[in-house]
Image (cartoon, one colour):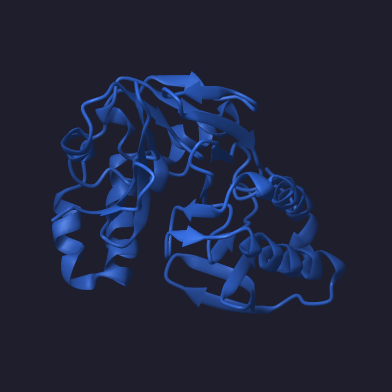
Length: 270
C-alpha cells in the first residue's frame, strides 16, 4: 500500500504517503490540480488517475524532495524558480531512498522496507516558472499563487478561492524548519506569516503538507508568536535531535520552530 486517500469535501482529496507527507488533488469543472508530488514513493500518477479524468496541472509548493519527488511522472510541473537549484540538488534517487528510510522509518517503521522498494527511479522533469499572483482557473475554481518565502526561498501557498481553503506546503506545519542554506532569514519567514494572516478572511481552513492535514488561520498566530520571541531573544529554546531534525527548537501550543541556534534569527542564506 503506497497511498491513503481521504475525501476532504469541496472536491478536495488528501493523498497520504506512508504518513510521511501529504499531497492534495482538487478538481474544477474543466481541469484538476495536483499540489505536490511527495517523495517519489509509489505510482502517484496511477493514483491520481483513479480519482480524476480531467486534464491535470501539477504545482509544487516548494522545492524540497518530499514535495517534488514524483515530478518525473508528469508532463510538466510548476515551481518557483528560487527553489529550482535546490530541487536539482536534492531530488535524486539516493536521497529519496534515504528519506524513505528515515521518515517512513520514523512514522511507520513496519512499512519502511516496502516504501524503500517503491521509490521511483529518477527521470526527466519539465519545469515551468511559478510566479507571485498567478491564477490557475480550473473551471469555476480559481487558484491564486501567493509567494511566501521562509521554509524555503521559493515557498508558495495556494489560495483556492472558490473552496475557501489555503494549501500551505510546509509553511504552517506543526514543526517548521528554518535552517541556513535551505531557508530564508527568520524575519522573512515572519513577514510571510503576516502576509498569509492578512488574507485569512478569504479561507476557513488550511491544508498542510505534514502532520494532521487540516488547520486554521489561528495556526499562524502561534507560529508568529514563536518566531517573534526567537527574533527578540525572549525565547531561544533548547537544542534537540529528533530523526532528521537537528537544531534549536522553540515549542508552544503543539507547534515548534526548529532553527540553528540563538544567532540563527538573522541567518543569511548561503
